[in-house]
Image (cartoon, rainbow, N blue to C red; front, side, top):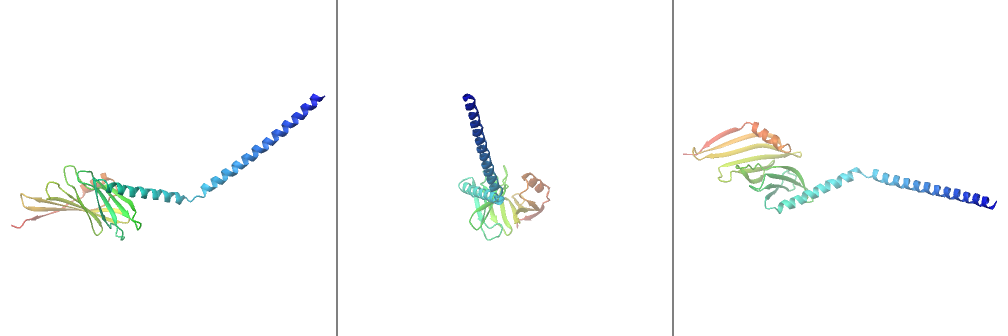
Length: 219
């Protein structure tokens, strides 16, 4: 009789213990679900623009780093002037002659920080004209290339800034004939967005008619 009674008491004890464990597990699951819900709600309520702002700031930081990198690199030179005419100085960075054809435009802000606005070419040519200078113009800037051995062949590329776009407006080429003693000036009027592909740039230049005139030396 006693063993049966003891077995009954032991069974009740295990049933009670199992019930307590079940309640504890259920409680833990409820707490975990509640915590998960709060964390999810926290991320859902984060302003998406804050992530965008951080990303943009990181890009600007990298751009500033790039400027520092180029300024310390002897393969590049830079010019500083107001491209977009907002009263704030901007920067144009170019590969040096025979060092490449990179050209980068950075627009400045009131905090003396710069954002990369354009990456294109400086119109240097293998075996031909090389970048000579970059000058400020009324509408933007002008890239000047010259034939390196003699100063009798020069091409100017006029680029204007308009509503975040850089437009190649005109190409002016001057060459001098020593034999016939005249200067040949050719002008191409374009309206090409420099943010388009380099391939389309050269295709547009190649298909645009030149207007040429000859100016003879005075005898």
